[in-house]
Length: 326
Image 1 (spheres, rainbow, N blue to C red):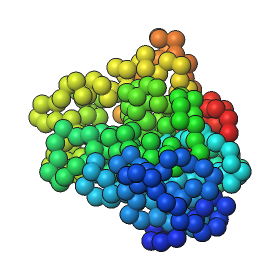
Image 2 (cartoon, one colour):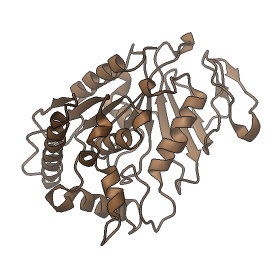
Image 3 (tube, one colour):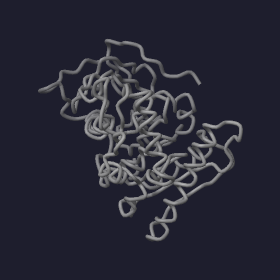
Image 4 (cartoon, rainbow, N blue to C red):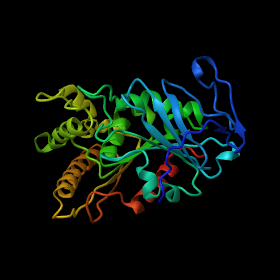
């Protein structure tokens, strides 16, 4: 799969494919998102690069005070977006050491062909953990603020979406699966469906192994020695607020979809440690959901820590079934 790579463009494409330049309102924010509107700045995001040539996949890169570099996003539109309909939205979050192009490489265009849903795939940092970190030595890396307070309203200002609980879902792989579980609980009214594909669900089990890994990986790859949760002492309130197993009631009345592999590669230490911890944490999480009477769908396929295309397709179909119809 050839990724949708950034190419600077000075001509804005309308939804009908014709060239157009649209005047902005005060502050550069579009007042509405009609079918032929040019995509513009909103919610603290200033577009610095774009590629809208593809009829479905639209690429944007932003300047934002929340992040010390310019993060990107791919927005995948349904085949019939030109029809003027409004659509539900799936926010799809990548894993560690990945980026906003990951799911395009994996096959998201094929998974959603003919389906009436918008898929938003943003950058989340190499080890951002979908969090505003306790400390950073490389400038702002406030991924949680960027996604929830800037990207989400930017999407709703520029695309024909349902700006409501039943119009949004969040899903992710690995670190992104954790981010999906965290966002769905912490921002309860934002997402009616949450899915975690090989994402950890328990921050404190096994002496806090996942929290220690979040701190270590973010320090090495994201924050220049800073940490997501604080070291040597954690910000305990922050850990509890982000920990899915401590937020069980926040999953009530949501669609919950969970995937964890049962047989990681025994000669691959990283694969083994990752998926064994994911599996144990998801089983703990599922047990608590079951005890609370909260319905959930779960899968334990063979294999280790990787994106399973068949279960991504199943998940997307379930998201569409749960959300408001286009």
